Amino acid sequence: MDAPSLSYRRFAANVLAGAGGRIAAIATALALATALVRTLGLSTYGTWAFFFVLIGYNGQFDLGLSVAVERAVARAAAAGRADRLDVLLNTGVAMSLAFAALLQPLALVPMPDRWLAGIGDPATVRACLRALPFCLACSNVAAVAGAGLTGLQRTTTLAAQRSVMGAVTALGVIGLAVAGLRRLDVLLVVYALGLLVTAVLSWRAVRAAGAPITARPWRSTGDAARELAIMGGTLQVTHLVAQAGDQGLRVVLGSAFGAAAIGLYDLASRAAIAPRSLMASLLVALVPFAAAREGRDGVAALSDSLQRSTRYAALAIAAGTIVGLFVAAPFMTLWLGTAGAASADATRILELLLVALAVQSLTSPMVALARAAGRAGPEAVSTSLAQPIGLAVAAHASTLVLAVASHAIVTTAASLVLWAWLKRALALDGLTGRDIAALATVSAAAAAGAALLRAAADAMAFDPWLVLAVVAAGTLPAAAILAVATGAISPQERHLLFGLARGRRDQPHR
Image 1 (cartoon, rainbow, N blue to C red):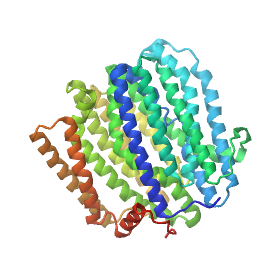
Image 2 (cartoon, one colour; image 1 turned 30 degrees about the horizontal axis):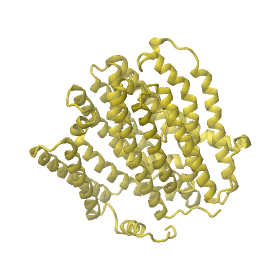
Image 3 (tube, rainbow, N blue to C red; image 1 turned 45 degrees about the horizontal axis):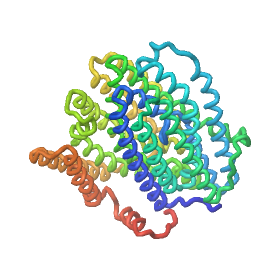
Image 4 (spheres, helix red, strand yellow; image 1 turned 90 degrees about the vertical axis):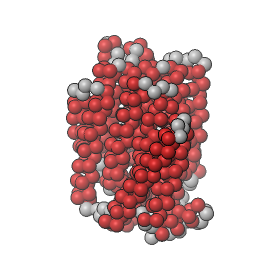
């Protein structure tokens, strides 16, 4: 097979495809959440949400294999070692299946009802726990197969597969719920089967790209397992601690304020993650791209990647966060179908999380490059310290909003400390003063414009959905125009993007 392209045109295509896939995933998740809240009720939805965040295309319980496999595949493909791809992917699948097999006996261990009551009805929670290992196996196999595509710089193919199958699977779950199915464990298994179909499609796409692979997980090798385990194990510690922190926060909220509080937090956090999810497509593409470039061009390639990715991350997260802050109240009212106390709490939580996640997102390109360089340890240490501290503080909060705010403040502060440490440890050059000034100008002008649009919409007593449409339609294009006018997007980058839109052929990396 030919070595994957390492041009910035290919990188931009992968980022845009990933963003499109993220938009589709967000829309699907919002539709699924809305349908389940109205069909199952907020408390039952809170239980579903507790388990649903563990699986899916972005599930955190994946042994770190998604990043470890895509990094290893990218480096092997850039080095021309096509034979290595078969070993890496099969080893990743074998590790996923082995993990599920080890987890299944633990899921069958009887637990007292009082331990499970904080998540929801004990019988329902117990049934979901028993189904969880199978769901995780499907999710992780899909993550490994998808990582093969992103490692080969083919995010465009993966985004299309996940968008279509995600929508089909969500419709299936919604249809069963509307038809009267109330067993959450069955709904989770149905969703997991959709992930398994996606895994098959991704595997076939890797083979169609010219990679000589055959599904033989029993042919795993020790060296491949070690390579994936070292990187993946470190990342899994990070993921597990972060996920445990998020799930722990849900337990704290449920125990202190009732299961409905978990549902409110989940709805607000899903809405808050939208801007970061759009920007995350850049980070997903950045790890394999930077890993391959570092292997070819050395550490200097990481500084170049950091400056570019941070600028674009800042533009994306600023525009999305500004829109989110000015439409939070009408959005939650529209979503929950009420303007009562629940909607007010959800709105405050949404606003808090939007700001916290925006700050954390600005540090994400540095973290992604550290992963690409094989330096995932500091991220694990930072997360392991921040999450328990955040939970301890949240547990002593007197209100739902204060509990969420306390946790968010601690984790955001930890992300800033991690960014500063990694920048020094990797000796990377950050943004220039000109870049920072341009980004600040875009953000300030976009915020002013969004405020004027919201004020006008309120003065004309627009319905909530129309407020959303007006603020988003006015702010996002304005931010893009300002980015060009201030130089936040350079003429060379505009040329690259316009060429991509016109379908120009790939140019060599410069």
